[in-house]
Structure formats: structure tokens, C-alpha cells
Length: 146
Image (cartoon, rainbow, N blue to C red; front, side):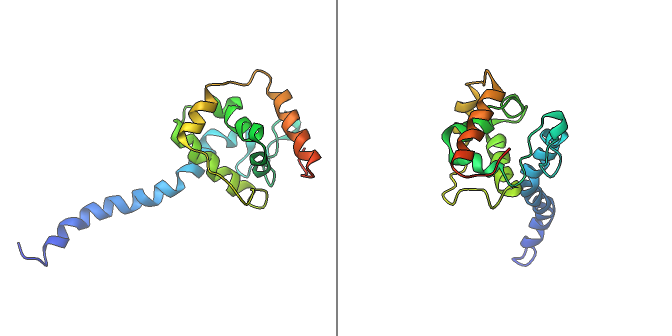
């Protein structure tokens, strides 16, 4: 086989891999739509009448507090999701930036698989109380969150 024909062997492989690479970039968004949007809506706006918090333009502020950061992993919908720890970290990293780009701290530290695994191992006993505490502290810091 000549040198010119060898690249042709790679074309079928590229035809398969390129679309997969594009899909990998969409995976966190797809996982949000599949695992979160049923309650939180595709745009993250939630449902006040059903007690589902609005994450839009707010959720990034949770990363300003260690307990807020932990809350996003430990809330039952995240902690009990069928997603693996790495996929959950990827989803959370996408979510805070996509839903609240102006609320994300400048020194954003992305979630890691190990951090998600560690935090998932400690479930929340009183979700409403923990959320109220985090929201209260953020409000005291001057951030507008309901």
C-alpha cells in the first residue's frame, strides 16, 4: 500500500469518532435534561408552586460557601442520581456556568469525581433546613437568592 492510500484507512474511524467527540461536549447538558429538567425545567427556572427552587442566575452563588458547594452534591436529586461520580461532577460544572454565568465566583474550582464521591457518602437529613441556612448566609453576604 502506498503512503497516499494509508490515510484512507483512517477515514472510517474518523467518521465514527468525530460525531462522538461532539456528543461528549453535549453530555452534561443532555444529562441535565434527562436527570434534572423534569423538576427544575430545561432552563433551570424550577417551579415555585411545587417547591422546586429556581437555579437560573442563582445556583453559581452556592459555590461561594463550602456548605453550599456540598449542598449541590448532597441534595437527593443529585446524590441519588444514577449518574456516576465523574458524570455528576461534569454535570454540576456545566450547570453552574450554563445556568448562572454571572453568579459563578471568579475563583471557581471545578467539582472533581473524588469530591462528588466524598460528598455523596454523607446524605442530607433535612434538605430544607440546609438550603435555608445556605440561602440565609448568601443573603447576608448580599446575594439575591430566594
